Image (cartoon, helix red, strand yellow):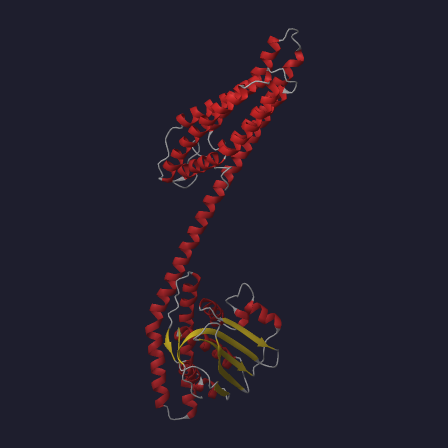
Length: 456
């Protein structure tokens, strides 16, 4: 919405929002205040032309009288805008309407002087002045019938009265002198149609804004309901799921045969995956709602990757996969980052690598480079596998603008990892060829707290 096109107000208040009238009256006041200088410069130009055409000081005296009228109107509208800002719009608009009517009539004084001047084109200039006044009123005051009528009635009356008076005062009573009055009436008819269409357009825009607000409110309510459902699901499933995982671990240690241990281990791993899926759902919901926060703290990145790899030893062994860990010797001993979120990203990457690799192995590499600022390091984590790989179209789907939650079949965790990486100021990328495996890399910059390095 622009200031020159305020919404409908006083006569049609019930379109959805309680502050509608105050908002629209405030917009009208701002538009009219900003328009003061346009009207002032236009009238100055008319006065200058009239001065040359009439050959006397009447146009200058008229312009001098117009200055206080315009600035008093500006003061009235500033007061109106302040009241609307406090959500206290006046019930009646008679005071600003009266002053706008006075201003319109005062402009008609110059139109009358020009009309009856001896200057050959005085009538044309008078018509331009009056039509310009009507157009300006339609642009800035159409939101209010009261103010629109206050501006239009004196000008329209003069548009009709001047040709009629010219005809009656003419010595020859030439009927052609009435033509301007007929043209004025035709113009007023077209103007009313245009004014009504502009008001209808404003009202349609207002209804669209109300509908958009209601849609946003509905979306917010749906998001809150979804968050509540996810939270209830987690609360209901967490206790039996942890009991299942704990019991499976006890059974695995007590099992005698390797086959039994393998089956119970698969059960425990399935429970752990279910727990992680629930956590991922909660994180995705908080990411979408902007509620997830990053909490940097001192962390040894080498211990972090060792713990992640250790969590997948059993899963890799069950699939007869080799699991490697390479740590560069120049990796700092202590940095500041959110180790829980970095661990979550690496866990998702390693889980996918183990899941989609049927032979060969999986390797996690940790490297370090100097950061862009002193005492900062750029840590690079890479998870490489010898799995089936992905096509370029699959990679484009995963890392495209939409970053779908399905992540080309790679699970919810990868979609969350992409968002977490961006939230921490890092980046997540991948290289892959069908039949040649995949390499997922995660790079993040962090402050260095201890520079002592140890080989892996």
